[in-house]
Amino acid sequence: MNSMCMYCRFIPYEKRIEEIVSNALKDFNSEVNLTEFVSKLDLSSLEPLLLREYENDFHFRFNPVSMAKAIILKKLKGMKSFEELYDYLESHPDEVKLLGFNSRLPSRRTLSYFYNERISVDVKRIIDAFARISREMMFKKGLIPDVDLSYQHDDNVSERTLRRRKRRYIENLIKFLKENLIHQLPIELKRNSVYTKEDLLNLLLHMAITNDFAENGSRTFGRLSSDTLLYHLRKLRVEEVIESFDRIIDWTYNIARRVIPEFFDMKLDVAIDVTDWLYYGEWDDYVIGTQPKRGTHKAYKFMTICIVENGIRFTLKALPLKTMSERYRVFEELLRFALERIKINRIYLDRGFYDLEYIRILRRLGLNFIIQAQKSIGIRKVIDENKDKKVIIVKDYEIVRKRKPVGRERVNLFIVPHRVNKDDVSCFVTNLDVDCESKALEYAELFRKRWGIETSFRVEGDFRPRTTSRNISVRVFYFLFSVAMYNLWILLNLCVGLRFKGKIPEKPIITAKMFITEMINEKIS
Image (cartoon, rainbow, N blue to C red; front, side, top):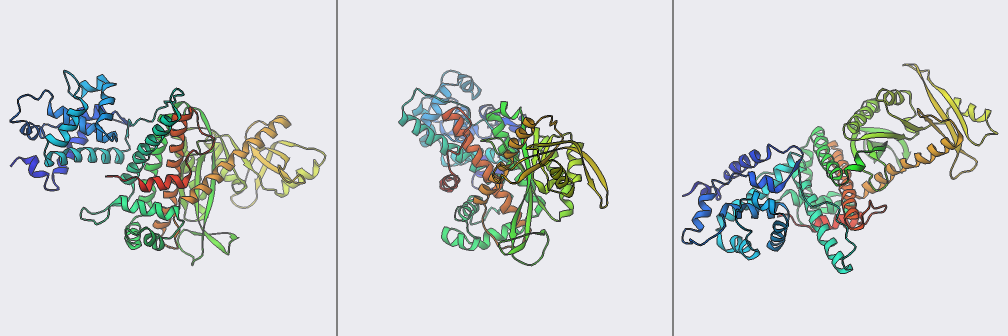
């Protein structure tokens, strides 16, 4: 019996396919041209099986290996019909040659007949395995397939055609995003597992859309138990969870960068903030004291850095705080992570970051900042001395820390009327030049961008399952899962807005709940 035929009945044949796929991927660094990749696949071991299918037919015109590669390409690109494959190849003659068709392109009927009638079940399994393993390895390596995300706005089609195209595009894009999420989730299942990673992901999405716990969510979802999900999450290490979701968030950012590279080449405004996930149990690791709220003064704290430009509020990274003493280290880690990916124009920070050490870190990294200042004794004195002024500007205002380690830093202080409470004022410190009242008012208005990160936290809450677990791996997984889902939702709206409206959408085209529902309904084979 032929070795590949024998392998298709046992697991080990996948090892050989993994070797072939790995060799074909070694020349790609970040983005994968799928046709070029498929052309590099060594299907020599599959060729005897394909030729055997034609042993009594001397009239076939097309190389069976090229036909097999065309089928693999169809599956990798998520095409739903052979008509779609034919139309794509017909419009890309150079790719036809890459696949090995020397004379002419097979017809739609020939392509369909080859896969559905000509080849055996064993060969189909091998072709399907090549496509599946190729997708898995691309996602695990962080490589981006050249799926069709480009801007193709067209005003010359009917409303009905536009709706059909939009529906089809959204379905394909959601399938693409879900596949990536499945392959990169840090959950490992055994080959004999009753459930798949897609089942676990669907349960997580159901828990998020219903704002429910694992126990109730599993009952209303009705496909697997909460014990199964929590068993796999509790096995994970915190570092493993963070590393996996860093890859997912990075992958999402790289897709967005590919869609609108000119935007991400500009200097961007960012914000950093700390969000509390309130906790009602006993003191434990990662549980930190916070201001009393909703019946508790305990919380899990996460520090997050986010792009706060309209329509593209991507969260770049989020980290849990184990103790408040490590907040400066986490703050610097977030900034260095962001600087490796984007150019930072300004960073906005709320009054919780009005601290000498944060300012020193920002200056050490050469970043421009605007920080909302607390009304300290020194700032109140400045306000009292300038009651007759609408806008107060103090250059080289000195922030002094008298407790150890002592220190002082000079910044520019500006104080402007409060937007809502006319009897109050808002105070800010910055390292930017503030040479006139109009500049101070401009910076105060720009600071409103910081509310973008608050909006991100609110929407991310819609993607977060509820839990009472004291296991930090479960908590970190749920939080970072909500961040990853939020970024995928932003990416989906960005792609749909650019493709069908020709611009970055100011408001979401697809709601968060609709996105989650579509993710659950999209089945990945």
